[in-house]
Image 1 (cartoon, helix red, strand yellow):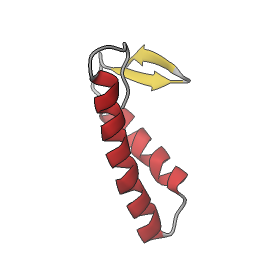
Image 2 (spheres, rainbow, N blue to C red):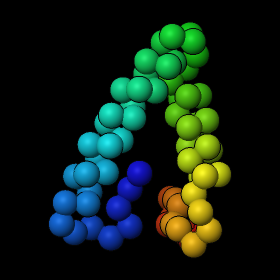
Image 3 (spheres, rainbow, N blue to C red):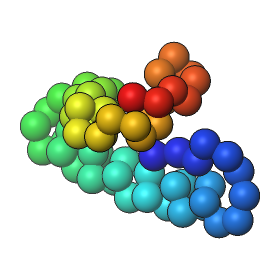
Image 4 (cartoon, rainbow, N blue to C red):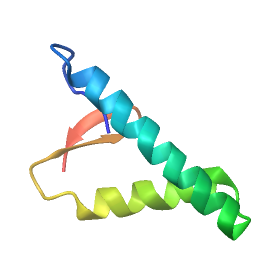
Length: 66
C-alpha cells in the first residue's frame, strides 16, 4: 500500500498498514518454511489482481492506472 501524493496522514497510515502486513507475512513464511520474499510476492500479485479497474497500482516503481 502506498500514497500516490504525499500529504496529511496518508503516508503514515500506509506505513502502519504495511508494517502490520509484513508481520503477518513473516508468520506465514515461518509457518510454511518458505522465504518471506515469496510470501510478499504472492500477496502483491493477489492484491493487484483484486484491484478494480480505474484504481492505481505501482508497476516498475511508477503509479499507473489499472
